Amino acid sequence: MYQPVRPQGGDEAGEQRCGTAIDTRPGTTASQAWLRRVAQDAGHGAGGVPAELLGDFLIVLVDAATSGRLPDRSELDAVGHNGRRAAELGVSAGNAVQLYLSAGWRLWRELPDTVGFPDTVATARAAEAVLRTVDLAVAALADGYTAARRDMVRNEETLRREVIEDLLRGDGDAAGLVQRAEPFGLDLGRPHQVALAAPHGAARTDTVPAALERSVVDGVGDRDVLVATKDGRIVVVAPATSVHDPDLGVLLHRDLNRSSSATPWRVAVGRPHPGSYGIARSYEEARDALGTAARLRLRTSLLRAEDMLVYRVLLRDQPAITDLVQTVVAPLAQARGGAQPLLNTAETYFATGCVTAETARRLNLSVRAVSYRLERIAELTGHDPTDPSHRFTLHAAVLGARLLDWPEHDLRTGDAD
Image (cartoon, rainbow, N blue to C red; front, side, top):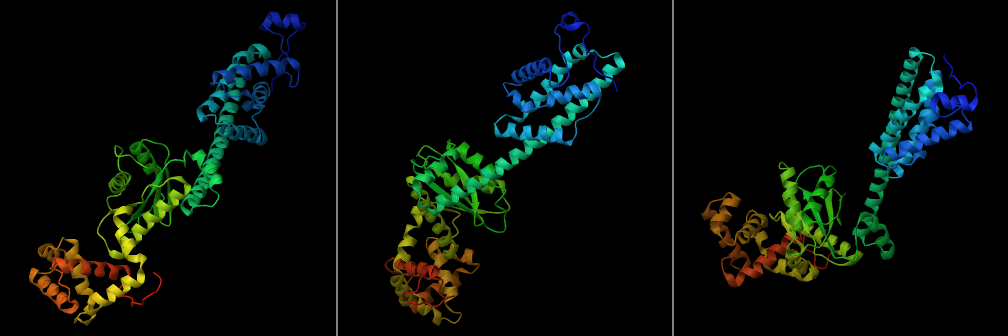
């Protein structure tokens, strides 16, 4: 191995040979000043990155150039640690790498004159050692940076999920929740609404939120949006839209079904409410809308809480709705095939706007068969579905039967839902 050539003739001779008299031996005042200047210049050249993130990298480079020794594991680990620090300080990955590359070429630009390599072969070997050291250091830096970013994202996602869980649950510590939601851009002083999206089938929901959040932000025009998954559903918390903004439910339904055409989605949107408790209230409305639609076997794929209020009214006085079902549609159980075929016919008939031909098409029956069933319903219940004066009572009773899951389950007045 070659050794650095020290300036001869004292400081004055060194200044005449290379511009400044520098002793490159580690720990000397001259070497420290030189390396500090190179580090500061590299930091400025990398966009103002703190030069401290270089650590002892320049000393390692000088050692590689003068002795040919490549960095050991502990030295590379130190560079990796600096990569983690860069990520934690918010330095971009490109600027962090640029800091090390800039430090490498700036040091090499002055190193041959400073050290005084004896010949071109020694210079080439030193250059190779420096390049290989820079290569190893940048790889270690990138590994540390990536690991830190991964940990930060994981930690942020955990905090994000906890905030969303507490918002949807209506956490009692309102002041604390406001403070925790603020880093995610959520202004709880504004009215918010919650939308729930549930797939029809076994679609994965964990791959959707990131792209969907960008779409909602683009559509709503506000970064005050949170998207997550809960209980196999996608949850979207967004500020209340004005009459001029795109409708949140329409936006979600369109994007979800466009991105996953093989799996249709049903979207329910709660009403907007102010404050942190308003988010929990809107979430409950959206969740109730999905559950009620499933129990009623509604075909609607976009549900709004305000349109589902009538069903909540029916369920609010369960003894009354149970009595209505028992009185009006329970006699359908006397039919030869049981109550279910006639109940399905009445339900479909009302859903089609009382159009017999469309009812027949949906049930895959003839018009004559549907007409016979409607007549049979009138005979057993005393309420003619074709008579407008009877229609409301019968329709309410049919909806109540679905809400109470009758005839699959017995009617018990006063039972909890």
